[in-house]
Amino acid sequence: MLGQVLLATSRSALVRRSVSGFPLTRKVVDRFVAGEGVDEARKAVERLTDARLTVTVDHLGEETRDAGAAAATAKAYVTLLESLRPLGLGSRAEVSVKLSAVGQQFDEALALAHAREICAAAAANGSPVTLDMEDHTTVDSTLGILRTLREDFPSTGVAIQAYLFRSVQDCRDLAVEGSRVRLVKGAYREPASVAHQSKGDVDRAYVRCLRILMAGKGYPMVATHDDRLIAVTELLADRFGRSVGDYEYQMLYGIRTDRQEALAGAGHTVRVYIPYGDDWYGYFMRRLAERPANVAFFLRALGGK
Ligand code: FDA
Image (cartoon, rainbow, N blue to C red; front, side):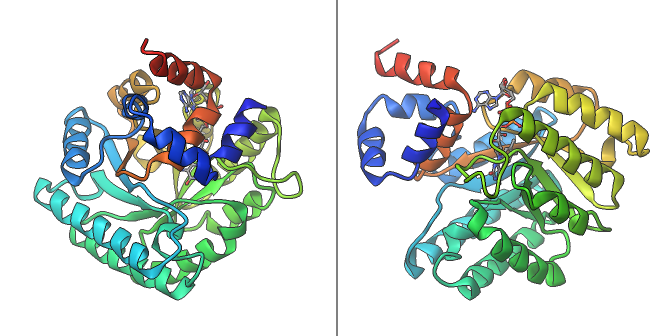
């Protein structure tokens, strides 16, 4: 219930202004966001890759409504990738892109053009790009853009949200040679007509999708902090003869860092999703919505504790 309220307010301009303007908010946001500028993002990349982790960096922002802002987001990614290039990390440091931040909502062709610029800059680093998945109304468009991008940049990946009914079929379509699919539970408020609503149903749907991806020919990116799903992944890897390099785990910056390190220490590829930038509100509210304990942490910080 609290989660639903937080997801609803993640799109409220009024709450965005009040929360963003509160000085102590920043302290709490820092737990989930690497910083505002490219230098802070690069430092986080260096710190995590030094600790045997791999990363995917997200320039925060979504639902851009004009061409100028879309171009600025694409430019920010290109600048970020240029600043990472001297580190020579190749595919150990990729980027994640929300197509709505580069114009998808008002001009799909523009979003595709900007995504191409980002993929070209990433290719110059020897790294792929992964498309984040946003609310269910964007899925067809995102998968269409993915198909086109993959003609020139075959390693481009995409996130698929297990909570959507359609995702079982999307996973079947994508479980093919060369594809990279990041499986997530799903972080948006979706109606019962398109998505599972209860945690149990979402978890079962995750296992169905995971089974398809692990049995298929693509590269599964298992993005969850859920120990039970990590255990299921290990069973499926065993069953389908996948070794540690044939799939990877992904987790969010600042969440279950001990688990990230333990999996990496056991030889797994673990990719940490690092968000940076000043447009952190929507991302931050979704993280609060996922876990009531985060709200308590937030309120304690606002109270100065
Ligand atoms: P679940 O929410 O059940 O959490 C399992 C356990 O993990 C919890 O008990 C807790 O210990 C810990 N945990 C989870 N969330 C936490 C939090 N916020 N704070 C503290 N602890 C927490 N979604 C989407 O719709 N589109 C996308 O493109 C992406 N991309 C993406 C990339 C990566 C790398 C990850 C890890 C996740 C996403 N997501 C996403 C978010 C995803 O849909 C989902 O909301 C979160 O991962 C939380 O789900 P879990 O699978 O972790 O399970």
